[in-house]
Length: 95
Image 1 (tube, rainbow, N blue to C red):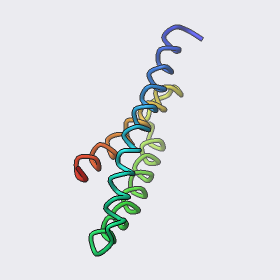
Image 2: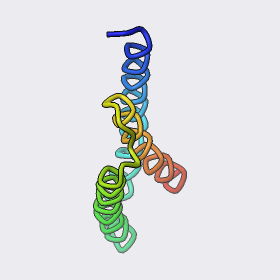
Image 3: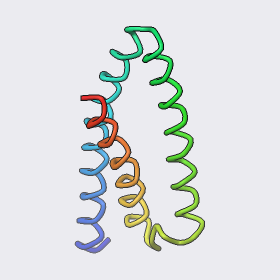
């Protein structure tokens, strides 16, 4: 494996780690909102499910159209970036 390839996979690993941390924070924010109950909790739950389905569909379409790149490392990093944008948007909205 070349140094460039190793660096690309190291970057992907860092991206995955960062996404995991940000996701954990959003999970906590969402859990708090849902635990409070009421109409807001119901809306948040519905939004969460809808967002997950939309994000998966968008990623699938990007993969089918070749927008994710050709190398495994590039595809991995683009997939992580796709979900990271969604997580960041939720973090901003829920904060």
